[in-house]
Length: 365
Image (cartoon, helix red, strand yellow):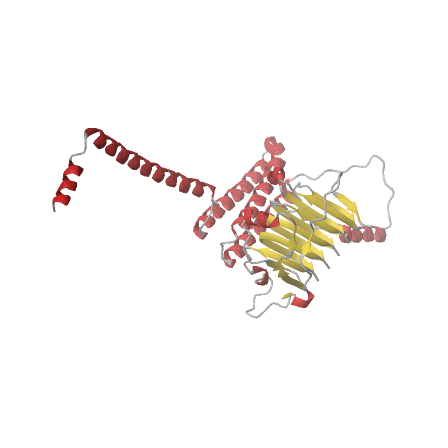
């Protein structure tokens, strides 16, 4: 008991210097705790600012509806401009601005499709398609056509020959390509029998849209991260690409093998093509047949880090969950299938494919 009383006596009889030090230590602990709370709040705010703009379906739908109404209002404004001769010069730039807005809306759907229900993705794409058709009609209706005149009177032609010329013109007139594909982007175009290599470095991320168009019997190797990839009119080609931050739009591929990783992949008019995919949302096919799917099997030094930085490090298994927009029955669509294990290509190591100097291509031997 005496020992306890002595201890209590010594604790209560701290000299003023010790008491001052004790109080200062408590103040430092309180200040440190408050600082940690402030840092935690700052980190949470920064994470919220850096996160995607939409993390809920309702927020996305509100933004999509607002953008759609704005484009429709711009279309009405273009019709008003066309009616005023003094404002006719502004018509073409306004229509081009609308085309860019529709392309941005298309990208908005692609970048947020990973958390949207399939129905909302389908409805959004249908609305975008309607906007494209309306813009196409406005271009045809409002922009003045170039007037032709002949300085010398042309000799009369046999009417039957004229009919033949008109029919040939109808057959040879190409369909207007999709708005997303005609955007001015770097890419490989109009090549045959070539090996095409491009390495996207960190400094090029801001200009990461790339196009593959009108290629025949080519091998294409794209290393590094891209922002968006557009693939149009490929025949008998093999495409191996690193991760894509946004979407991949594919049109008119025949007898091809494509190894791709992206947040969204849309495939139109594909025939007898094999797709090796890693994708966060369900792949979409339309007007396609004989297409087959398997998991992504690409390797080069640094690809795992690039997949992680692109939000594609996880194998979701969505490569086997394909939505066929032209097949509405409950049973499996006959237009696509899973590649049997024994028919799949092995892991493709493209580490040794280096980008040559010049235009980024080398001819196949």
